[in-house]
Length: 385
Image 1: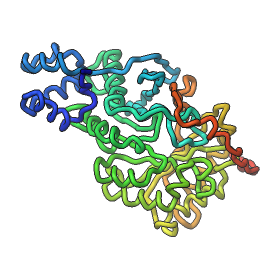
Image 2: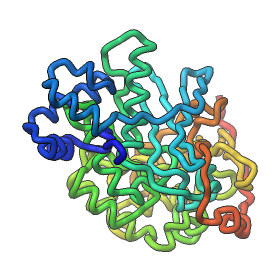
Image 3: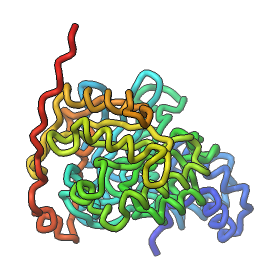
Image 4: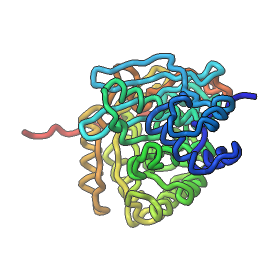
């Protein structure tokens, strides 16, 4: 019989497991703290647990880390790990240090079945969902390895974004227990405002997340209308913009933040005209299909890769697009930021995570669709000094 991986359990599930071993549920809290707060994997070290429990755990359970296949460090301090998840698959996890926070970008699947045109992961196809323990193990390794290197017992990772490989809401059963571990004060104690699930728009699961474990929500929008979004984000054909925006409004009823973050990858001549910015404003404004959606836009520089056939928007075009969103056009402006590219020298930036995927979905064939139409766009006017 294979050993039970304790990283698969949130605190309630660990309590139930301790009861199966004939122990009191409060032992689960002690065990949980050892594993997640102290990074312990050797039961013999867990000195406040009864010897009988430690012996039971040693014979039946384990804290199973992911094997590190490689680690790369960027000139800007970003760190990327490649973790072996078996069967020829590997996933990537990225730590992004900033002055006021440390953010970990976590993967939820080996590959991704959504197939967004601008995402390197999507072009690799899909192999399988990660287990809860494999999601949590990315945080467990990063947090305790970084503490060791920095010589601190203080928390290093303050924010987690489920923006690595995969569509988190298509792995819902494993995602929610992992989120609960991240949020639990006996584990990592992260604020709901500082844990973000990013989705391409799986509408039924957005509604379930609102009920089960509402955290901050980011939506990969990338287009102002259904026609273009159908091409860039194929999931839009199943859950078009009106349905997605309605789900976003419902989510805000329980969300820890009072806005949705819309992510928008800037693609040269595809989705970056000022007219498209104004269409976006109408889409989320009071006269849009579902009424006003409280939101902010995060404009993301596209990180090119050969199979995409797409180009990054120029800096002037990005700034003109942002200016159109911020200033508004009769609908009122929207808070807009331009994401600073981090870790692009180690392929750790947004849309670059690829890992190693034994594809089961014939992604190479599926992605050989007609090229995206590139619209000629006049250059943005120069800013007078």
